[in-house]
Length: 188
Image (cartoon, rainbow, N blue to C red; front, side, top):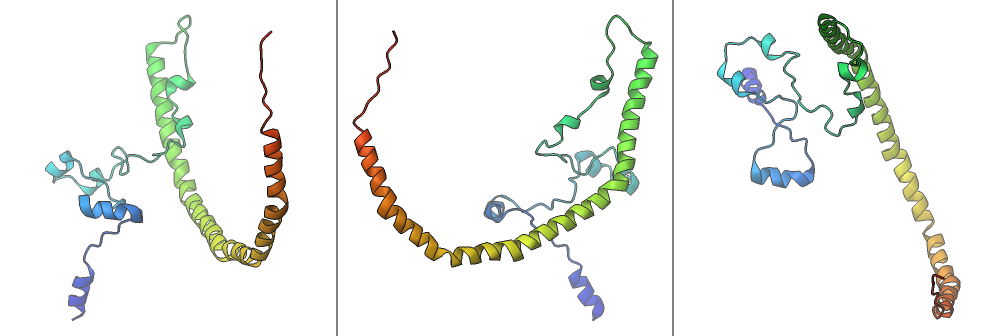
């Protein structure tokens, strides 16, 4: 009996992480796609004899657009952006090629090593901080603002009466008095 329940629970469930406004469009057009799975390319579908280590590789990114809003466009640095030799002084071709290769390899691998040590703790810290701020805003700031607005409705209506009785007639009178004036600019 337990095995039957486990088999029923092992069904794959797709979770749509999109906006509620997009859900109607997705129902009409196509089924929602899970956002955390990489799409298989044609070569991967044809070649079924590859190992899982080859499929999960650093050379084949699982998520193609990791900066869709272009927040870090300033960090797209290449070797030519950092090292540039003028025409008058040049090093040997082999030195230039090896320097380029070592620059790229060290940049990529040092970034990967540093992100292994920092990315996960910073992600956890950011998530905790965002959760604290969200909780604080939802349970503290929002209710306090609504209490102040509810408590100050009488002040808002009093201010509307004062403005309607004293300021509005004065402003209309001033606008009618000054409405007859016109200014003409002429070049001499």
